[in-house]
Length: 203
Image (tube, rainbow, N blue to C red):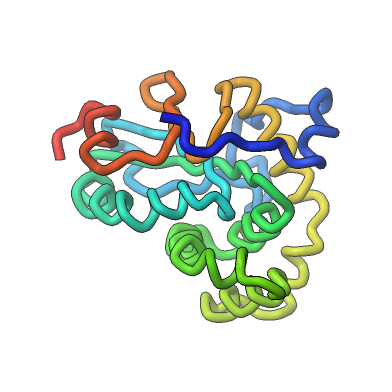
């Protein structure tokens, strides 16, 4: 079930005719633009997730379903998840940029922490979301110089938006979270039992 329809961000919409295909070799990309994933590269099943860090349904999936997915499927080597940034607004875009400036091993823990504290940094009335993101990044061990570089990285911003447009067209993404499972796109926050059924694994 589609649980969150999105409005394409202004920047991404403006770049609609400029969408570029993903580069074929990860080692040809800057570190900040490389793939982000969890799980073994040899896992029998790979799922691709399209998410926005300001999507409440993405946060619910992260907090309620992903703990079981991690323990029962990812850690035992049954499942690999590849993450695609699909920011719904400028706040999510900046958060995605900051996340990509962390070491790849810290990426999943950081986005999990952002989802768990979404009400604090993204939606609290009157807060400066950049200041709140800095507090989260500092807790993850990021220096202020790296943080400032992350939020000012126009090349990374353009890359994320370009990939978002390309993903939207290629995979018909109409909501977040969406999942590419066995070549088909499935939209909506899922409970663990529904997720396991969708990917065809026992767990």
